[in-house]
Length: 114
Image (cartoon, rainbow, N blue to C red; front, side, top):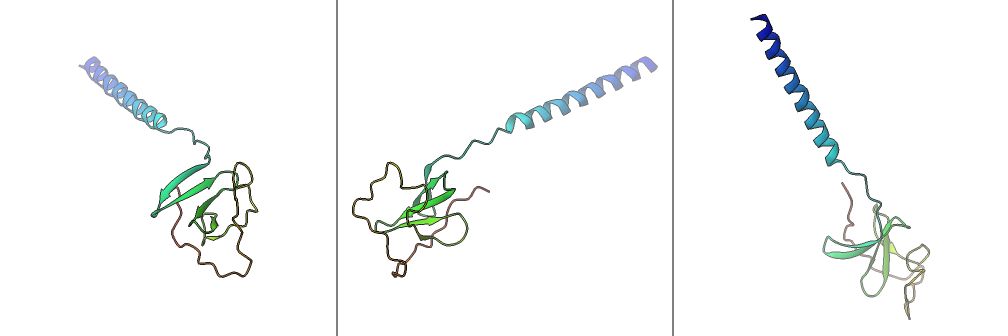
């Protein structure tokens, strides 16, 4: 009887050990390395915005002006003083509004990873 009890105990202990290992391996396999964020467009809050990884911020145009948002706070007029718009970008006859010009900036939000 003693050998049977020890045998049952060993079977149960091995089962628990295998369960723990399989649960832990499933957890670690579901974790994946964070991919580097690259430049992309995203539709969020009813508007298309462009993420520039070099500037770590969002860009948006209403067809009249360009705006910048770092993910915190309001949109501001973009003065082309960052990475975005320097290469492979045609501004044509676009003029940056004067410093004190009255410009109605957008109020929509930007996408944030939670």
